[in-house]
Image (cartoon, rainbow, N blue to C red; front, top):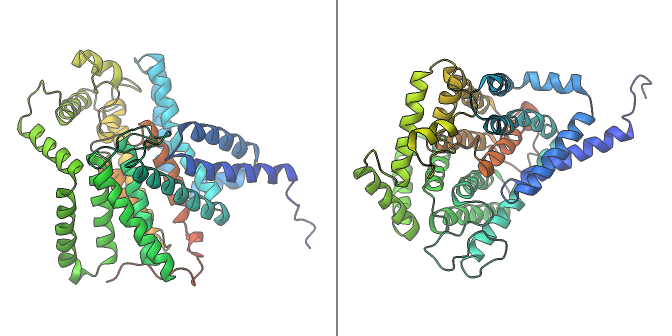
Length: 419
């Protein structure tokens, strides 16, 4: 044994284990419990910092392709904060939310260890099984832990979080389930994951009322079609999947109603419209106008709430955020903030292009859902869905690093796209 190699102190080992388990708890908590998430996040940060090894951690972070845009976005929020004209509470809230950009990097360091990464994926699977089981059970029984108490088909059955967040989370679980179905070599496991994918799709189409989930599911399915189907077969397969999707959507009372409402909102839109889509259009126009008026540095951190309240004269669904992540960054932080966000998406795509791991397609799907969902939601700002995206970004980034390619060949087969 080399005497120059010093054993790791027990206290450091204990903190490393606490850090790992709290990171796993974060992944589990994101879809089911805000309280558990906050406790796990605090424990994780304390353990991560207390464990030391800063030189090796920083060296690892610097090598991450997404480190620069994440640090840039977090720095912009921090640097803009002292000069913002917004109330202190709104500024502090923005700092609290976007500080989780750095949490992504910290989680990537922890999940670079294959042990914690595997446990985190298992925790995510268990968490989503609980969500899906509760959602289906909620059709027949008013579960005491469910936020909705609506029996029967044709009503919203979101459980731990509101339907928009749950449906998008379920779409990401669908991406994982599809990936496992295609990659796992064990036939029983492949069948189990295929059933999980069907259950996830059924949940979004028939038991959750949000249109965001439908769009997210379409994005995930399209991503996997493009990734795993031969070029010569893509159009026939896409046509078949599209026809099947139309049949499923039209057979869902919830989705049929929501899509009909969306069409009517667009057809009858007026500037004073207070429908869901009408209010969104008004918020987008306000954010875009503010961005044009303040193109470089934006209106300031946390300013949307005050500006929207003054502009609309009411806060019915309009003063929290503009329901568009691109315009949100562009309005409050100018082109600098918007370009930093686009840079982050580009770097994530770059990671997916160069990845050789079995989670490559899941990263593509996650980036696609994040990019599309950001057109009509704020997935990096709104509570439940932001918790989910920050933790999943940390996990999926670590899962697509070169070291992640050391996956047992007996369990997985090649999941590279066919020519």
